Every structure is written in C-alpha cells, then in structure tokens.
Image (cartoon, rainbow, N blue to C red):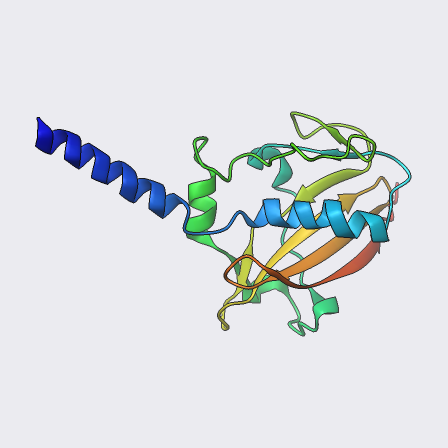
Length: 176
C-alpha cells in the first residue's frame, strides 16, 4: 500500500512539473498589453476580451510576420507554433487554458464568455518560434475593429520575458 501511495505521489509531482515547463505567454502578453500598450494607444470603446483559449485563439487569425521588429522573411512559413505548448494548453485542466482577469480594468475591457461581442475585440495567437533560429518566440495580439486590425507583435525570450514589441495597422476594405 505504501508503494502505491508513493508511486501516485511521484507521478503527480512529475506531471505537475512537466505542465509548468513553459511560461503562459498569452497571459504575459495580455498583462503587458493591459499595463503598457493600452496606455500608449487608448481605444475609444471598451475592448471585448475572452477568457478561454478556444476563444482568444481565433482560428481565422494566423500568425502575422513581425516585419516591424526587423524580421525580413517574406512569409510566415519560417515560423512554427510551439507544439508541446499548444497541445498541453488544449487540456481543460491546463494552467494555460484560461486567462486570469483578476486585475482587469473594467473601464477599458469587457469580458465575454464566447467569441462574440461588439468591436473592438482582442485575440491572441499561440506562441511561435522561428524555425531556423532558437530562443526567439513571438506572440501576436490582434485588436480587431470593424474596418481595421491593429496587430501588436511581442518578442519573448525562452524565459517568458518581453524583449521588444511593435505595432502595425491594417485597414480592411470590403467590396460588394
């Protein structure tokens, strides 16, 4: 009986340690956005945010090439999601499944449970690494308006610290 309890304890410790291998890049990016970026580029309306990974990782938004950070690749094919991170994040029991909004400024943000709501909306991509380099990790934050997308590119080191960031504005032109 003691061996069974010891085995269960050891397995829980190993599983707990393996789940915390990566920092929660999206949470770090959101906290930086909330504390620094929103002050530099305020929005006229409340920004709609989503707590769950299935909603803030919108499938229609692919990783955008961070050219304003000096990345000269012609396409985003040189970037790849961190597969082990994304796989562990899909588990509902993961520490990285839901963003922590405990310090959220209610005057600037509104929380919606599902990926619906008024403009502007905030989406965050999964962390991506450059394929042929090590250590450079990028996350995009999309501030989605009806007629434009504002993309904030954040560069991280492997410890989860933000090294650099920049902003791009893309106008949306609809033809009918």
